[in-house]
Amino acid sequence: MSKKIKVLHVQLTKNFGGIESLLTNVYANIDRTKYQFDFIATAEKPYQKKLKRMGGNIYLVPSIKQIISYIRQFNQILNNNYDIVHFHKNSAANIVPVLLAKYHFTHPKIIIHSHNTSPSMNNIGLLILHKLNRSFLDEIADEKVACANAAANWMFRKKNDVQIINNGINIDKFTYSYKARNLIRRELHISPDTFILGNVSRFSEQKNQSFLIDIFNAFEKKVPNSKLILVGDGHLLKKIQKKVIALGLGSKVIFTGRQSNIPDYLSAMDVFVMPSLYEGLPISAVEAQAEGLQVLLSDTISKEVILTNGTKLFSLKQTPSEIADMIINSSKCSDRKSGLARVRNSYSLSSTVKSFNDLYQGILK
Image (cartoon, rainbow, N blue to C red):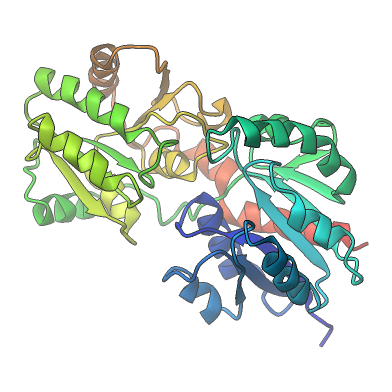
């Protein structure tokens, strides 16, 4: 048997977000007799167990703030003779690991993969570093990849040679289920005729759940028989929960925590609302469209995520009441079967896995 192609992915975060979901899905479906995926992470988390079961190694590194320890451990990991180091980045502010890989004696091929359109933290210093480092990434990368054109524009100065790879999902898994809809509603003690708004994301500044609470507060006044389901976890969860109580919405907003059966929760919803401050190409919005949901997104999100006629944009400058009216109007023309073909054609997991395979084979020629 020929030697496996060894790929090091840099890096996993504490949260099971879009990057972590994408890599888990790709590794589960790519030919693992041909590829060995290993991963650098900042912390050990339960979601990583699946990667380990599939044969992936998880290497923990200290914070970049502990620069000497970070460099030492990163170099030790690179000593494992990787053919490719695949960097998954939200910004170019930190290029230390990229430089370490570039000048390591094993000389792995380097892929820079852009997944966002803004830095993870709103810091002027990081933004300046990002702008300064973009040109270095253009020169260092053997291949440049982005999840959408907006993400390519954010990460690279030269865009003509960036490959766009869609964040594919298991379309058959994300298909509307009337049975799952009723099951989740019974578990949450929600009547069949209650109108449900929903969102799936980590609780962070980027995801802007505070504004979503304002939207629902306005919506609930117009549609009293309604509830909001928030699926996910994160460092702002308790702050959002306090806001819900202060607004008197404690019986109306349901916090489910992190869930593994996301398709079932999407089936239980009537409208999916995502008021993010920025996004590259959010997988959760693709999943919601695959479920046939009416989807309302802030216009700060990449327009490439609009795949069905039931997906609309709103401005974060609009009032919560105006957005609530948009939700009401959108729900009047709901058809959970429309637009699925476009999602299936553009965001199938098999297509994404093929793109990864072609990317790796091409870079090693």
